[in-house]
Length: 122
Image (tube, rainbow, N blue to C red; front, top):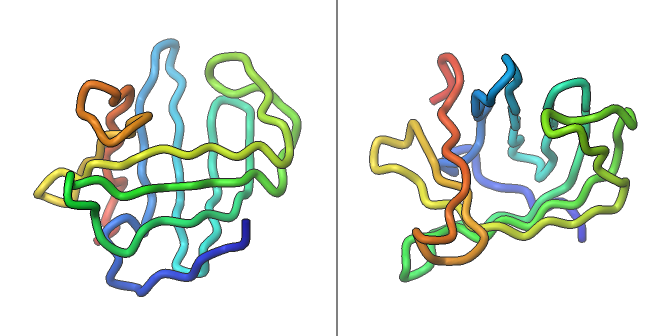
């Protein structure tokens, strides 16, 4: 997988956060050059991603992400993500553009996390 640049107008660019139990959180910063920085607990990762330019007819963006750098420390769940790990998920963006659901498939029943846009990101 190689990074897929996105236009600066893509609605998923920016920093997204989810607050988790035990005062932990995950943050994803998606950049227009097709790279992502993530923070989860003590873990710090960099990855390359491919995100569809537009949602599918079902309303989901396909998001494939491959870890390219990491600090080897545990995330909020106590796990350590291995270099080269590839995750494929689907994103359902809220009409406001301020929240999204992260899902395992193009089905609302498969959604497992809700992220919100952090700070002044447009």
